[in-house]
Each structure stands twice: as C-alpha cells, then as structure tokens.
Length: 345
Image (cartoon, rainbow, N blue to C red; front, side, top):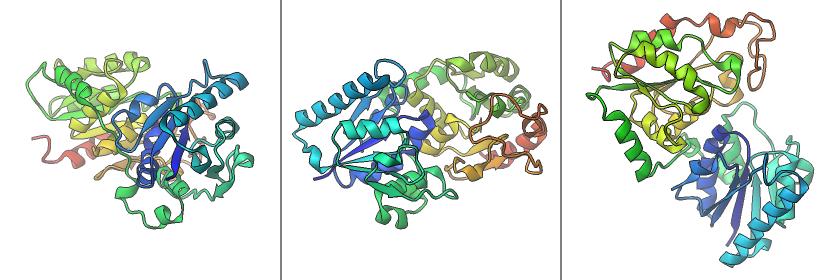
C-alpha cells in the first residue's frame, strides 16, 4: 500500500485548495500532510488526512537544521505506523526547493511536482502546470492522469470539516440577536491593494435587509470595527474571535459572502456558500476564483493595467488604484441583491 506525503507550506488558501488532491490520494492509501503551523488547524477532522505534520518554516524548522529535524519527524511517524518509506510518494503542492529537500531528507523515493517549480531539480516526476485551469484542478493533476482526466466540478471543489467546538463557538456568536439571514463580509487581505475600500458603505446598505457578519483574522480588527459600526447593532464582528474552521462554519451559515481575493473566498468554496469575489490587481484567470455554486466575480475589466501582480502589490504601481476605487458600491450591492433574491426575505 502506498503512503502519500503531501507537502503544502504556502498560504492558508493554498492549503484549502489542496484538499481535492488529498481526497483523491486517500482513495489509494494513507495520506500524511506537511503544512505550516497556521494551516494545520484547517485539516482537523478531514477524513482523508491520517496525520498532520506541522512545519514551522519561519521558526523552529528554519534553515538546514530545521529541515533535518522535520524530516526526522516524518520518518519517526512512519516507523511508528509500520510504513515502509520505500513505497511512499511525496506530492510537492508547494514547489520551493526547501519543500523538495524536505522530501529528499525524509527519504521519499518518488517526488512529484510541477515542471516549472523552483524545486523541480529534486523531483523524480514532473507534471505540466496548466495555467488556464483553476489552481485546485492544477493541484489535483499531481495525482496523475486518471484523476486529471476523470474530474468534474465536484472533484475539484475543496472541503473543510468544522468540528463540534467550531459549531458551538458560532452558535454563541450568532445567538445574541433575533435570527436574520446573514451576509458575511471579508474586508481584509495581507496584500494592501486587494482590499476593496467600500465595505463600510456596503454594510450600511445591507443592514436594513440582512444581518452583516465580518470575518477575518486579528489583523483585520480595525477594518472590521469600521464596517461593523456602519452595519448596526446586530452586526457580528468575528475577526480574531473564531478559529479558521469556525470562521468557515460561520460562512457556511451565511446566504452569501462578499470578499476580496483572499482566504475567506476559499473557505466559502469549501463549505458551499455563494460568493462575490472582488478582484483588483489580480484576476480570476490566475486560477483562484470562487468554486461554490451561484458565485460571481467583479472587477474593473476595462483597465489596461490589470492584472499588475500575481498576488497583488502592497501599493499601486501607478499610484491611482483605479482597479478598486472605480468598482462602485452600487455595482456590488446590485450583485448582492441578485444573488440573494428570495433568500433574504
């Protein structure tokens, strides 16, 4: 029986988009996942994951000694389970040389990754990257031709599994007011130019029709306060108060999520909540758009300077930031009204 080692040490959203690959590999045998300490909680309760090995790439596992320690943890886990590493396959969902070296040091004989990855010299099998596909589909293609050719929309849809503790945390948060349909807003992003500037104005428009919930991490608290203040007394500020899986559970209970091109979009895809994703310096064609049914993307499509960056720069290279400033509140609110027609009554 083949043991699969999935190495994904990139952003949290990338970990979410790796779950279709994990699900496919779990059909063949046990799957262990190496991911960052921040991403590890995302995979709690996932039925396809046997074990999560947290890799603290910026801390204790930094540098050559850290890589060696992490590789020993992998080998020790396999010895404990009685696995034969000679039958293991490593899937390099994050393509850095560091990730590839971790697989080499763990003595994994088969190392599979994309043919254009920085760590490709350490791979034994190189898979063509398909730039026009969604990134979840690209990652799934690492599992081989059968998974790649036989896939459908369901097979590339990510899945997360909030637990009882996550549901209880959301229960406590939403129980403070009379029940109303929830529209979740996610105004944050680690990339400054990807933050649409009009969430406060949108919240004020939505509050007479729905209950607004603001989701995000602790770093989004200031943005959230500004939005919650405009949304009225029954608004929910969940920034920094919920785990990532509990945030996914709150999004699951919403009738819609409005978000930037950031992690909450992928959480919504994983729990099936319709999503409006606002794209500024990036575009859906990069392969990171929403996958939940009845979703849409919005952006200022006529700008010649879009896209300007694969992730989104900290500041606009041309200093005008028109890709976000010219996407009006009216246009986003119209999209919300269209997607929630009937649900918000």
